[in-house]
Each structure stands twice: as structure tokens, then as C-alpha cells.
Length: 229
Image (cartoon, rainbow, N blue to C red; front, side, top):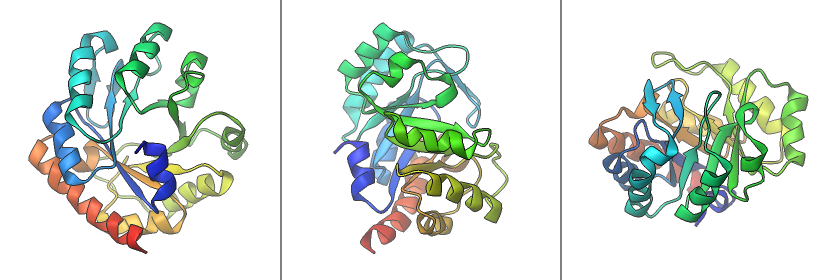
């Protein structure tokens, strides 16, 4: 089942953003109960402090990651300074990537119009009117990247308020990433304000396969409780 269908079907879904493009980490996320995983290319990833090489340098590894798991795999195709090309997007589609995840202000129109499921990432710099406009555009999921990454800090009521404003502004599903520590018992609070998806990443998962699998299982347990309601 595609990620967008899982998100529409479930009360809450779980994505693991891999801290490294690594087959063992991908399998660990699968075994931990992730609904989907996300990999990266052409970008420096702030939370993990990893630099992900250009797409063509990773293509064989990315193929192996897709083949190693039975869940949807999404791709961050680049950032401010570099991005996959229009021709590379055609290759990405043919490889079987399920979705593209990218900041709206970095996304070329050839990605927007590619026909791949789009997870459009927004920041706290966007106005509510900016965010509302996404309802009228051909994007599928909104990632609310609303707070500064901090491995030591937790989310607070003010952060819930910001997420709620995004949820309230949109008819499309909202995904919240762990830019700060979101504890397992905080997941219900995200659900209660209408968030449809949690994306856990380097700030909570670490980068060791066994550790990532166990952490994923702990979030899966809480999400399963929500989905049984």
C-alpha cells in the first residue's frame, strides 16, 4: 500500500527518516514497524549532520534499499544548493520511489509536476495564507517542519499550538517530524490535534540498526493503540 493510502486509512502513520542511506537501517525500520522510510540525496542533513552525495553516486545503493524492504520508500531529492535533474526524476519514478519530500521553497516545478506523491515541507516562516494555498495545489502530504532542530530539547505546548494552526488551515494530512524530542507518550497529543503522521529521525532514533529498530517499535506500539481506537 502506498504511503498516501496508509495515511488516509490509519488514524496515525509512522515514517522513519533514515540518518544514513543504509540497507541495515532500512531493514531495522521495517522490522520496527515503520509504515514507510525516507532516504536522502544531494543534501546536508542538519539533524544527523550527514552529507548525502548526489543521486547518481548513490543510485545502486538506493535500488538495493528499495529492494530490501516491503514498505514505501520516499526520497529527499535535494535542497537549497543542489537537486536531482528533470531526467533523474524520470529514473527515480522508474526505480519505484513512492514519494518525494522537499521544502516547498526549494522544489522545482518539474518535481511538482512529476506525478510522484509529494510531501511538501513547510517551515515556521510561512504565513497561514501561504499554508492554506497548498490545499489548491497538487501536493499530497504536508510536513510541518516548524521548529529548530535540537537533540536535547522537548516539544512544548507552544509547539502543539503551531502544529494545530497548520492542521486547522488545511484539508490535507499533516506529518510532524521529530525536530526535537517527541516522546512516545506525546504521540497521542499529536493525534488529538489532528496530525495524521509522525516521522521519527536522527534526533530520537540514533544511527545504530538495533537501536533504531527498538526505538521504532516503541513508537509503533503507541501508534497501534491510536489506530485501534
